Image (tube, rainbow, N blue to C red):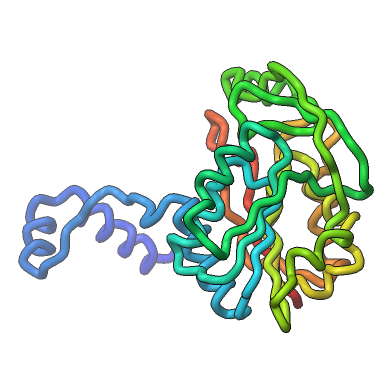
Length: 259
C-alpha cells in the first residue's frame, strides 16, 4: 500500500472515530450516518419500469400470470395509462383480479394460462396463491418459504398460445407497442414458445429468473438469458425479488428490451 493510500485510510478512520472530526463535519453541514439503501428492490424495479414504458412508448402491457392484479395496480401507480390485458387461469385469483380491474376501462382480464400449445392442464394450488404453478415446488422452496409453496389442491385450467390470442389483445390499437410481463412460476419459457409469431411486436419484457431451484424441472436462468438474447432482447435491469438467510439472491426480476 502506498504512503498516500495509508494516509487516506488513516484520515477516513480518524473521521469515523474522532469526536473533533465529527464536530468539524457537523459545522460543514455534513453528518456521518450508517449506510442504508436508498430504495428497496421493488421500488427500483417500479422506477425502471416507468422509464422503460415511457421510453419505448408502450401502449399495451400483457400481464401474464396476473394473480390478483398486483402488476396492474403497480402500472397505474407509476403512471402507465395504456391498455393492460391480464391473464390469470386460477378461478379464485381471477375473481379477485376482475374485482380489482373492474373500475378501470383500459384493464382487461382473460381467464387463461399461456403456454406452448393449446390444452387443458392441471395447475397446482398452493398455500399462498403467488406460488400457484404447473410445476411442483422443490424441497428447497418448501423450506425457504415456510410452507407457502406447499400444494394444497389443484384445478384444471385452459391454456392457449399467445400467438392465438394476440389479435384479441391488440384489437383497436393501430400500431401496438407491447411490453410482455411474465410471472408464471417456472413456466415463462413455455409462454415464449407459444409467442414466436408475435414477438416482433414486443419491444420489452419482464421475466422472473430463479438462481435457486424453486420448482422441479424449471429452466435454469443461465439458459434463459442466452435465449432472450437470441430472440433479440438485451438485459436492461436485474432486480432481486428475495434472498435467503445468507443474503444470496433466490430470484431476480429481469427486464429486457429489444437490442
